[in-house]
Image (cartoon, rainbow, N blue to C red; front, side):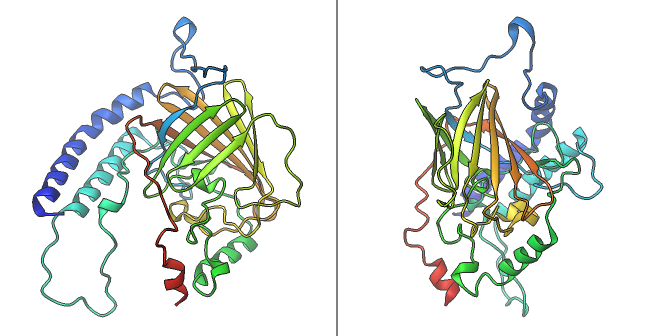
Length: 335
Protein backbone atom coordinates (compact mmCIF):
# COMPACT_ATOMS: atom_id res chain seq x y z
CA UNK A 1 0.00 0.00 0.00
CA UNK A 2 1.50 3.41 -0.97
CA UNK A 3 1.69 6.56 1.19
CA UNK A 4 -1.24 8.24 -0.60
CA UNK A 5 -3.53 5.25 0.01
CA UNK A 6 -2.46 5.05 3.63
CA UNK A 7 -3.06 8.76 4.19
CA UNK A 8 -6.52 8.46 2.63
CA UNK A 9 -7.38 5.61 5.01
CA UNK A 10 -6.22 7.62 8.03
CA UNK A 11 -8.39 10.58 6.95
CA UNK A 12 -11.42 8.30 6.62
CA UNK A 13 -10.77 6.80 10.03
CA UNK A 14 -10.39 10.20 11.67
CA UNK A 15 -13.66 11.29 10.09
CA UNK A 16 -15.27 8.23 11.62
CA UNK A 17 -13.69 9.17 14.95
CA UNK A 18 -15.36 12.56 14.89
CA UNK A 19 -18.73 10.91 14.34
CA UNK A 20 -18.47 8.33 17.12
CA UNK A 21 -19.95 10.34 20.02
CA UNK A 22 -23.09 11.18 18.05
CA UNK A 23 -23.45 7.61 16.83
CA UNK A 24 -22.89 6.19 20.29
CA UNK A 25 -25.35 8.59 21.93
CA UNK A 26 -27.96 7.89 19.27
CA UNK A 27 -27.52 4.15 19.66
CA UNK A 28 -27.69 4.42 23.44
CA UNK A 29 -30.93 6.35 23.30
CA UNK A 30 -32.48 3.55 21.27
CA UNK A 31 -31.04 0.58 23.15
CA UNK A 32 -33.31 -1.73 25.12
CA UNK A 33 -32.33 -4.79 27.18
CA UNK A 34 -31.56 -7.78 24.99
CA UNK A 35 -34.60 -9.77 23.97
CA UNK A 36 -37.15 -6.98 24.42
CA UNK A 37 -39.01 -4.84 21.92
CA UNK A 38 -38.14 -1.17 21.57
CA UNK A 39 -41.82 -0.25 21.29
CA UNK A 40 -45.08 -1.46 22.76
CA UNK A 41 -48.66 -2.00 21.70
CA UNK A 42 -49.63 -1.72 18.06
CA UNK A 43 -46.18 -0.38 17.11
CA UNK A 44 -44.24 -3.31 18.63
CA UNK A 45 -41.71 -4.83 16.24
CA UNK A 46 -42.71 -8.27 15.00
CA UNK A 47 -40.10 -10.75 13.79
CA UNK A 48 -40.51 -11.53 10.06
CA UNK A 49 -41.33 -15.05 8.91
CA UNK A 50 -39.93 -17.33 6.23
CA UNK A 51 -42.22 -18.83 3.58
CA UNK A 52 -42.81 -21.87 5.80
CA UNK A 53 -43.58 -19.77 8.88
CA UNK A 54 -40.28 -19.88 10.79
CA UNK A 55 -38.99 -16.70 12.46
CA UNK A 56 -36.61 -15.31 9.86
CA UNK A 57 -32.96 -15.16 10.94
CA UNK A 58 -31.59 -15.17 7.41
CA UNK A 59 -29.03 -12.74 6.10
CA UNK A 60 -25.47 -11.57 6.61
CA UNK A 61 -24.45 -10.75 10.18
CA UNK A 62 -21.37 -9.61 12.07
CA UNK A 63 -20.53 -9.78 15.78
CA UNK A 64 -17.44 -7.57 15.94
CA UNK A 65 -16.99 -5.82 19.30
CA UNK A 66 -14.32 -4.40 21.61
CA UNK A 67 -16.26 -5.47 24.72
CA UNK A 68 -14.01 -7.85 26.71
CA UNK A 69 -15.03 -11.49 27.02
CA UNK A 70 -14.78 -11.41 30.82
CA UNK A 71 -15.19 -8.59 33.33
CA UNK A 72 -12.27 -7.25 35.31
CA UNK A 73 -12.38 -8.06 39.01
CA UNK A 74 -14.42 -5.44 40.86
CA UNK A 75 -15.73 -3.75 37.70
CA UNK A 76 -19.40 -2.74 37.50
CA UNK A 77 -21.74 -4.78 35.29
CA UNK A 78 -22.44 -1.82 33.00
CA UNK A 79 -20.09 0.96 31.93
CA UNK A 80 -20.98 4.64 31.84
CA UNK A 81 -21.94 6.30 28.57
CA UNK A 82 -18.88 8.54 28.75
CA UNK A 83 -16.59 5.53 29.22
CA UNK A 84 -18.19 3.77 26.23
CA UNK A 85 -17.60 6.83 24.06
CA UNK A 86 -13.99 7.08 25.24
CA UNK A 87 -13.34 3.39 24.56
CA UNK A 88 -14.69 3.61 21.02
CA UNK A 89 -12.75 6.81 20.29
CA UNK A 90 -9.59 5.17 21.60
CA UNK A 91 -10.13 2.11 19.37
CA UNK A 92 -10.41 4.29 16.27
CA UNK A 93 -7.38 6.36 17.26
CA UNK A 94 -5.26 3.23 17.75
CA UNK A 95 -6.24 1.93 14.33
CA UNK A 96 -5.48 5.28 12.70
CA UNK A 97 -2.06 5.36 14.37
CA UNK A 98 -1.34 1.80 13.30
CA UNK A 99 -2.21 2.69 9.70
CA UNK A 100 -0.03 5.81 9.65
CA UNK A 101 3.07 5.72 7.41
CA UNK A 102 6.03 4.07 9.10
CA UNK A 103 9.14 6.07 9.92
CA UNK A 104 12.23 4.93 8.01
CA UNK A 105 14.49 2.84 10.25
CA UNK A 106 18.20 3.57 10.02
CA UNK A 107 19.43 1.39 12.88
CA UNK A 108 19.02 -2.23 13.84
CA UNK A 109 16.53 -3.10 16.55
CA UNK A 110 18.09 -3.75 19.96
CA UNK A 111 18.70 -7.38 20.87
CA UNK A 112 15.47 -8.97 22.01
CA UNK A 113 13.37 -6.26 20.41
CA UNK A 114 10.18 -6.89 18.45
CA UNK A 115 9.53 -6.24 14.79
CA UNK A 116 5.83 -5.88 15.56
CA UNK A 117 2.87 -7.69 14.06
CA UNK A 118 1.07 -7.56 10.74
CA UNK A 119 -0.49 -4.23 9.84
CA UNK A 120 -4.13 -3.31 10.44
CA UNK A 121 -5.12 -4.28 6.90
CA UNK A 122 -5.45 -7.85 8.15
CA UNK A 123 -7.63 -7.01 11.14
CA UNK A 124 -11.33 -6.20 11.11
CA UNK A 125 -12.27 -2.67 12.22
CA UNK A 126 -13.44 -3.05 15.83
CA UNK A 127 -14.83 0.13 17.36
CA UNK A 128 -18.05 -0.86 19.12
CA UNK A 129 -18.97 -1.59 22.71
CA UNK A 130 -22.04 -3.85 22.79
CA UNK A 131 -25.24 -1.80 22.77
CA UNK A 132 -26.25 -2.79 26.30
CA UNK A 133 -22.95 -1.31 27.55
CA UNK A 134 -22.25 -4.42 29.60
CA UNK A 135 -18.63 -4.57 30.67
CA UNK A 136 -18.23 -8.20 29.54
CA UNK A 137 -19.72 -10.68 27.10
CA UNK A 138 -20.11 -13.16 29.97
CA UNK A 139 -23.43 -12.31 31.64
CA UNK A 140 -23.68 -15.18 34.12
CA UNK A 141 -22.30 -15.67 36.77
CA UNK A 142 -23.16 -12.11 37.82
CA UNK A 143 -19.49 -11.18 38.26
CA UNK A 144 -18.90 -11.75 34.54
CA UNK A 145 -16.19 -14.34 35.18
CA UNK A 146 -16.13 -17.93 33.90
CA UNK A 147 -16.00 -20.37 36.88
CA UNK A 148 -12.99 -22.42 35.76
CA UNK A 149 -11.76 -25.33 37.81
CA UNK A 150 -8.10 -25.06 38.83
CA UNK A 151 -7.37 -28.38 37.10
CA UNK A 152 -8.71 -26.97 33.82
CA UNK A 153 -6.52 -23.88 34.18
CA UNK A 154 -3.46 -26.05 34.75
CA UNK A 155 -4.27 -28.13 31.69
CA UNK A 156 -4.81 -24.95 29.63
CA UNK A 157 -1.48 -23.51 30.73
CA UNK A 158 0.29 -26.74 29.80
CA UNK A 159 -1.34 -26.96 26.36
CA UNK A 160 -0.58 -23.33 25.49
CA UNK A 161 3.01 -23.53 26.75
CA UNK A 162 3.68 -26.86 25.01
CA UNK A 163 1.57 -26.44 21.88
CA UNK A 164 4.66 -26.63 19.67
CA UNK A 165 5.81 -29.92 21.20
CA UNK A 166 3.36 -32.06 19.27
CA UNK A 167 0.45 -31.67 16.90
CA UNK A 168 -1.84 -33.14 19.58
CA UNK A 169 -1.21 -30.09 21.79
CA UNK A 170 -2.10 -27.56 19.09
CA UNK A 171 -5.59 -26.12 18.83
CA UNK A 172 -7.74 -27.74 16.19
CA UNK A 173 -8.22 -24.25 14.72
CA UNK A 174 -4.46 -23.90 14.15
CA UNK A 175 -4.74 -27.20 12.30
CA UNK A 176 -7.55 -25.76 10.12
CA UNK A 177 -10.11 -28.24 11.44
CA UNK A 178 -12.65 -26.05 13.26
CA UNK A 179 -13.13 -23.39 15.92
CA UNK A 180 -15.68 -25.65 17.57
CA UNK A 181 -18.94 -24.89 19.35
CA UNK A 182 -19.44 -22.39 20.86
CA UNK A 183 -16.01 -21.04 19.80
CA UNK A 184 -17.13 -20.53 16.19
CA UNK A 185 -19.64 -17.95 17.43
CA UNK A 186 -17.22 -15.96 19.61
CA UNK A 187 -16.06 -12.60 18.19
CA UNK A 188 -12.37 -12.21 17.50
CA UNK A 189 -9.87 -9.88 15.83
CA UNK A 190 -11.08 -10.41 12.26
CA UNK A 191 -13.38 -12.45 10.00
CA UNK A 192 -16.47 -12.04 12.18
CA UNK A 193 -18.98 -12.51 9.36
CA UNK A 194 -21.83 -15.04 9.38
CA UNK A 195 -24.48 -15.99 6.85
CA UNK A 196 -27.65 -17.67 8.08
CA UNK A 197 -29.85 -19.67 5.69
CA UNK A 198 -33.12 -21.47 6.46
CA UNK A 199 -34.88 -24.27 4.62
CA UNK A 200 -37.69 -26.48 5.93
CA UNK A 201 -36.24 -28.63 8.69
CA UNK A 202 -32.80 -27.00 8.85
CA UNK A 203 -30.95 -23.83 9.85
CA UNK A 204 -27.53 -23.34 8.24
CA UNK A 205 -24.88 -21.04 9.72
CA UNK A 206 -21.94 -20.29 7.45
CA UNK A 207 -19.11 -18.83 9.49
CA UNK A 208 -16.52 -16.70 7.73
CA UNK A 209 -13.87 -18.38 9.90
CA UNK A 210 -14.56 -21.18 9.46
CA UNK A 211 -16.85 -23.83 8.00
CA UNK A 212 -20.60 -24.41 8.06
CA UNK A 213 -22.97 -25.58 10.80
CA UNK A 214 -26.04 -27.50 9.60
CA UNK A 215 -28.60 -27.66 12.40
CA UNK A 216 -31.58 -30.03 12.01
CA UNK A 217 -34.87 -28.98 13.59
CA UNK A 218 -37.25 -31.17 15.58
CA UNK A 219 -35.63 -34.48 14.63
CA UNK A 220 -35.67 -36.22 18.00
CA UNK A 221 -32.84 -37.25 20.32
CA UNK A 222 -29.12 -36.89 19.76
CA UNK A 223 -27.07 -39.60 18.10
CA UNK A 224 -25.52 -42.34 20.24
CA UNK A 225 -23.10 -41.03 22.84
CA UNK A 226 -20.51 -43.31 21.27
CA UNK A 227 -20.42 -40.95 18.28
CA UNK A 228 -18.27 -37.88 18.94
CA UNK A 229 -17.38 -34.93 16.73
CA UNK A 230 -15.34 -31.73 16.79
CA UNK A 231 -18.57 -29.70 16.45
CA UNK A 232 -20.64 -32.11 18.52
CA UNK A 233 -24.17 -33.12 17.55
CA UNK A 234 -26.68 -30.26 17.32
CA UNK A 235 -30.47 -30.35 17.58
CA UNK A 236 -32.63 -27.25 17.16
CA UNK A 237 -36.21 -26.24 17.88
CA UNK A 238 -38.23 -23.05 18.07
CA UNK A 239 -39.31 -21.61 21.42
CA UNK A 240 -41.62 -18.86 20.24
CA UNK A 241 -39.45 -16.55 18.15
CA UNK A 242 -36.21 -17.95 19.59
CA UNK A 243 -34.16 -20.68 17.93
CA UNK A 244 -32.83 -22.99 20.65
CA UNK A 245 -29.90 -25.24 19.71
CA UNK A 246 -28.57 -27.94 22.04
CA UNK A 247 -25.19 -29.46 21.19
CA UNK A 248 -23.66 -32.52 22.87
CA UNK A 249 -21.42 -35.47 21.87
CA UNK A 250 -18.20 -33.46 21.65
CA UNK A 251 -14.76 -34.89 21.01
CA UNK A 252 -12.85 -34.16 24.25
CA UNK A 253 -9.70 -33.18 22.33
CA UNK A 254 -11.20 -29.81 21.40
CA UNK A 255 -10.80 -26.42 23.11
CA UNK A 256 -13.72 -24.28 24.27
CA UNK A 257 -12.05 -21.38 22.45
CA UNK A 258 -9.01 -21.20 20.18
CA UNK A 259 -9.42 -17.43 20.15
CA UNK A 260 -6.99 -15.24 22.11
CA UNK A 261 -9.73 -12.58 22.32
CA UNK A 262 -11.50 -14.90 24.78
CA UNK A 263 -8.74 -14.22 27.31
CA UNK A 264 -8.52 -16.91 30.01
CA UNK A 265 -10.72 -19.22 27.92
CA UNK A 266 -8.08 -19.53 25.19
CA UNK A 267 -6.76 -23.07 25.34
CA UNK A 268 -9.22 -24.38 27.93
CA UNK A 269 -9.88 -28.03 27.01
CA UNK A 270 -13.38 -29.43 26.82
CA UNK A 271 -14.49 -32.83 28.10
CA UNK A 272 -16.92 -35.38 26.72
CA UNK A 273 -19.48 -34.00 29.22
CA UNK A 274 -19.69 -30.63 27.44
CA UNK A 275 -23.23 -29.43 26.69
CA UNK A 276 -23.96 -26.14 24.95
CA UNK A 277 -27.40 -24.54 24.66
CA UNK A 278 -27.64 -21.56 22.28
CA UNK A 279 -30.53 -19.14 21.88
CA UNK A 280 -30.87 -17.00 18.73
CA UNK A 281 -33.48 -14.23 19.03
CA UNK A 282 -34.03 -11.54 16.42
CA UNK A 283 -34.87 -8.53 18.58
CA UNK A 284 -35.21 -5.97 15.80
CA UNK A 285 -34.69 -5.62 12.05
CA UNK A 286 -30.92 -5.34 12.39
CA UNK A 287 -30.01 -7.38 15.49
CA UNK A 288 -29.90 -11.02 16.54
CA UNK A 289 -29.26 -11.56 20.23
CA UNK A 290 -27.15 -14.71 20.68
CA UNK A 291 -26.76 -16.41 24.04
CA UNK A 292 -24.96 -19.63 24.89
CA UNK A 293 -24.99 -21.49 28.18
CA UNK A 294 -22.03 -23.82 28.65
CA UNK A 295 -22.11 -26.79 31.01
CA UNK A 296 -19.07 -29.00 31.53
CA UNK A 297 -18.75 -30.17 35.15
CA UNK A 298 -15.27 -31.57 34.50
CA UNK A 299 -14.04 -28.11 33.49
CA UNK A 300 -16.26 -25.54 35.30
CA UNK A 301 -17.66 -25.40 38.82
CA UNK A 302 -21.01 -24.18 37.46
CA UNK A 303 -22.69 -23.42 34.11
CA UNK A 304 -21.98 -20.00 32.59
CA UNK A 305 -23.61 -17.87 29.91
CA UNK A 306 -22.20 -15.56 27.25
CA UNK A 307 -24.23 -13.06 25.21
CA UNK A 308 -23.22 -11.40 21.93
CA UNK A 309 -25.27 -9.20 19.57
CA UNK A 310 -25.06 -9.97 15.84
CA UNK A 311 -25.57 -6.88 13.65
CA UNK A 312 -27.11 -7.17 10.18
CA UNK A 313 -24.59 -6.32 7.43
CA UNK A 314 -26.37 -6.86 4.09
CA UNK A 315 -23.37 -5.61 2.10
CA UNK A 316 -20.79 -7.75 3.90
CA UNK A 317 -18.84 -10.11 1.65
CA UNK A 318 -17.75 -13.53 2.91
CA UNK A 319 -14.94 -15.01 0.87
CA UNK A 320 -13.97 -18.66 0.92
CA UNK A 321 -11.75 -19.12 3.95
CA UNK A 322 -9.78 -22.04 2.46
CA UNK A 323 -7.78 -22.35 5.66
CA UNK A 324 -5.85 -25.47 4.74
CA UNK A 325 -5.10 -24.62 1.11
CA UNK A 326 -1.36 -24.01 0.96
CA UNK A 327 -1.17 -24.11 4.76
CA UNK A 328 2.29 -25.06 5.98
CA UNK A 329 1.87 -23.67 9.51
CA UNK A 330 1.82 -27.01 11.31
CA UNK A 331 4.80 -28.25 9.30
CA UNK A 332 6.67 -25.05 10.11
CA UNK A 333 5.83 -25.11 13.82
CA UNK A 334 6.83 -28.72 14.19
CA UNK A 335 10.06 -28.05 12.30
